[in-house]
Image 1: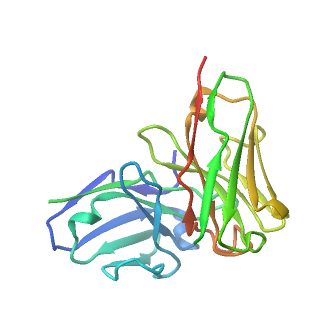
Image 2 (image 1 turned 180 degrees about the vertical axis):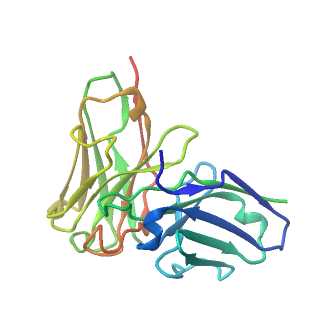
Length: 108
Length: 123
């Protein structure tokens, strides 16, 4: 079982804002990173650290954290944002890097 | 262009061994930590192992500890995963991924991923 918990599925209307959350005790001490994975493709890093986007990631993607919960927010979701999203961080021992179970985002 | 290309996957019987390789190019390989991450069919991502730039710090998921060994050859720009005592539950697509710094624990995310190599454990 994952030490990071995500909702299995979330949906959003085209152009609206959606928040995908990741819960875990270790998130009180460590930042989460977020990955987007489309069918048949390798994961792509979209957010890392406090709220940083790699080059090429649209600024509609943002990250935040409060207590034991990290969030990925997509402001103005586009059809191409439909994908699986995974959070990742260090565990409480600091010796492992678990992923959350993933959230399937559907853009309606 | 930064590129990671995995190889070595295949069909293997339970209890046997397999060695995966990852060829890196487009960056100074020995400046960065590296990881293996796997994804079972229809399932989520699972971190398998991480290694620092000089192999001085290594970590494993509990599910593979004692059976899998990560290593790297900086002279060959290559990362490896030796998998022993393979089980059906090790069946997955195995990704090689690059860390953003020399330590896999100080900056614990993966900024570049390969396309993966498939391992199937079955009799």
